[in-house]
Figure (tube, rainbow, N blue to C red):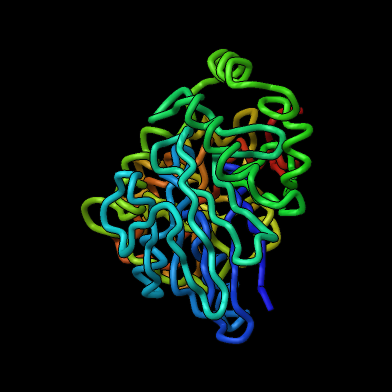
Length: 357
């Protein structure tokens, strides 16, 4: 029996897919996200699975892959397209190659158009297809950066994806509206970019006039993904912190979500590293927070209790991330940065002291 889970990274709207074989307990992850590696590892452990490989549908521009971190911690093989230009993978695949997990397989179909190295993955019984950023739900991937090509994408979709059975379910790499699954017949009929009677000229005209801004993380994500997600310089160690549910950023910072912090205010030290005028300003402050401006942190480290977890806070999460690095260098280990800072805390409607209405 197939084990299947669809997971999401909220920040990039990226879907990660876990596929496992119930008999052998071998599993794959399609398009893992760096910041979600701890979540993925926990799920694999809880379900008593053995991660044998991660598979990238392409070189992503909107998030950093978790492939290297998973390889480093679980010895899983990194599988990428032979046409994507990525370095450091264990296996490079192309048209009609097969990726095996237990008694189940994924077939590889080359579907360039968004990037040269885009691949689509078809489950052995053709009941499910994982289309990455080629075909989305009622949409397609973009063709206006990296090696984008509308004609190539149109051909890829019609020849490699729309030739699957109409009953085949489509699982895309992203969705920005909360939709999780579609089907071959649905997209043939209703996709506004290339369904129905839409021809190549129609599609190319549509794609060439999208006028969308480039992804916010492109300058960080593409170089990292060309290296399979392995950081340059001193590679971070993915050490477990068990005092809270945390996520791990590509810059090597543990982060805590506002909703998680709100439930444990009494059990952590909250250090606000803004200046006095900000601490008392319109954004207010987290209840129980102690003000130690970043410029004073090294001189006031004696005010902190080393045995108690510390959460650092600032306006946006940038200065407080730097505070985490400073405290790490001073020997503190139970550390996290408030993700998004006071901006996210306030937007989420969490309790605030001071501030303005």
